[in-house]
Amino acid sequence: MTSVRRAEPDVARTGTCPGMCPDREREERQRQMRLHKFEILAGTAGDRVPRADPRRAVKEYSRPAAGKEAARLCELRPAAVLLQTVHYLIDEIVPGREGPWAEVYDYVFDRLRSVRQDMTIQRVRGRVAVTILEKSLRFLICAAYWLCEEPIQVFDPKMNDVHVQECFSCLLTSYCTGEYENEAEFQALALLYNLGSVKSLHHALLLPDHIRGVPDVQQAFRINRALEEGNFVRCLRVVRCLPFLPGCAVHRHLPALRRGLLRVFSHGYSSRNCRYPLRTLTDLLAVDSQLAAAELCQRHGLEVAGGSVRFQRSCYRDPDPNPGSPALRLIGKEQGDRAKSSIIHGHRPSPD
Image (tube, rainbow, N blue to C red; front, side, top):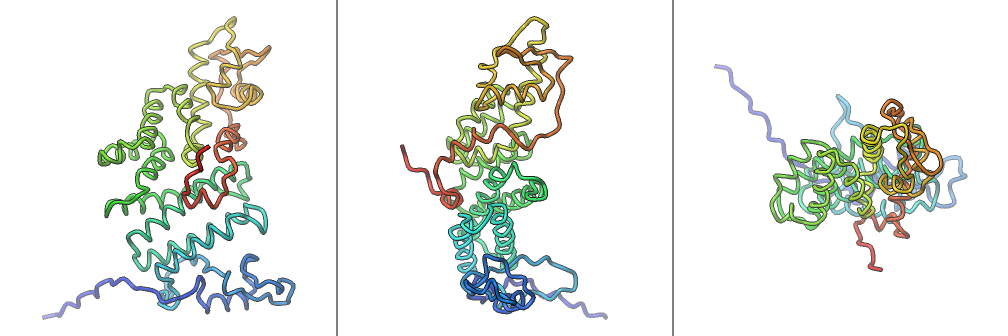
């Protein structure tokens, strides 16, 4: 009789690395001259081999590969160190004092990804995991807005979206394990970020009453309902009232909402003689100037003259996506003078 060997249970491991970057990696990247400029010891940047600052170096993301040895405990950062690393990135790097913010984004994106990798390997759960995921999501969602005018070589919105969706998936699953202070905020953000998604809406409709009834979630429901009804005017009107972070979450859908409104108006007001006031349309489109509204209409094949728009069904066309969305000031004004770090930490704006 052949004996059957039982598989060893998959036991979660707890790391012992006391710093933001394991010693071996820091020394290796220093030797290979792969230190990021944010990690170089002050006064050594001009040396033949710049030295790493142990207080600033942060473990980089390492892509899993077949045959690669498993991470050793001394290279895994425990939960408390992971949270400390996230706070360091947000407080010291995100403000962008040392270069273009696109460069800051690339660095923080990679290091947060590494934090989540260590978190997954160790199966970190509970409040620390939720806090890391929430701050990661705020960073990714805001970055998609802050960098939306950058070329694809500088900022890849599709790659950013992949990580937003992964973080939402982990976070919403984590919320099933207990009560968390910011759950309603992020349930609403998930609904807005995935505006029009049947799966996202179905998930939200199954939430407990005390979450569904929160004003942020109710507002997200109203926008989804207006979109489902094809009422783009109401949809954009509610979007215009959103605070900064929810505005960033819905920002990627604004071109489609405006396109839908102009398509509906091109059918409903199609006439050779009818003229629609550009000032009124500017307000309905939720853009900040008549010039922006006129340019938007012209990109859709509509004639603009004398402060009016002429809608004709036969002239309307769907343009190619334009990264320079006229929504920038609409959402940007909601940020006001709030610092990026404050927003990502989730600090509430002070009342006027």
